[in-house]
Image 1 (cartoon, helix red, strand yellow):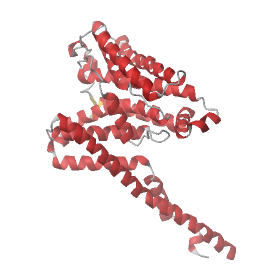
Image 2 (tube, helix red, strand yellow; image 1 turned 90 degrees about the vertical axis):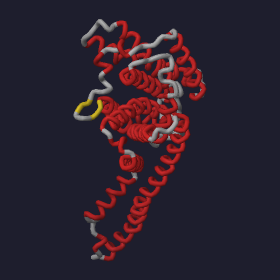
Image 3 (cartoon, helix red, strand yellow; image 1 turned 120 degrees about the horizontal axis):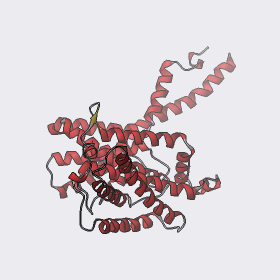
Image 4 (cartoon, one colour; image 1 turned 120 degrees about the vertical axis):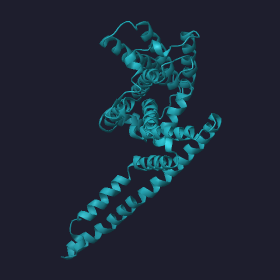
Length: 360
């Protein structure tokens, strides 16, 4: 009997296992992050400084949390341009209230600090969802309008004043510099959110519905998926995560004014897209959005360490993003080629196995 007619050996299974691993979208992105990190560490000594790495990852965690919410909306073939304004408004209102309640302590003030910005984000996200689902407004138009509205509310609420670092509770102002097991607290918080939503998107019907809506909206409706409700829920969750990002913004900067969060929506969308979340819906993952945030902040950190002008940084950052996405696409094609060859080889081998067994 031909040896190839026997069940595949260890080397065959190992090859197929590697092929499955290489088909994972995030592998190429991780490779890009590692390459940029190694080159930066070799060429820029300040990059590998422990304080610099901790601050970069903490900053990336804030972007990742907001980008995570944005990715949920993008997966359902929508977009939210108001997340920056939601973050800023939630940060200012929460910071102002915490300043007024500075005399209080205990669990109550911690719960207020956590729940208030999330609640603000839920309400503002719900407005977005209702405009899109019931008023039938295109998401880009509706959220562009609410971006202006929420930004205007932030100016009105602030009244030209700002929240100062000394008004923020000590436990919150120290959160940014706190480390657990040598890793910044923001990184741990961001990791919890990424793990939670990775589980939700992979195993729960809610996550699968968002993928189905983004992949084929018409088919999703025929499958009796409650598309209107899921759209509202996606915007609510996106708003809640942006509101939570506002809390971390307070801890990160201390001072919060009417411009807080300005332009943050573009950073969050860019991070999600760089992380492989499709603007056309149905493709991407929470982990990809988080890795995209790390890559984006890594590029920004490298440009800052090189002491490049802030105006030149914007141009170079855009060029770097294009290069990173192009390199990511090339790597993904290269990594998927072995998988395609293995599938082709497997298809060619199957008839030979059957033929050999029949001859025997």
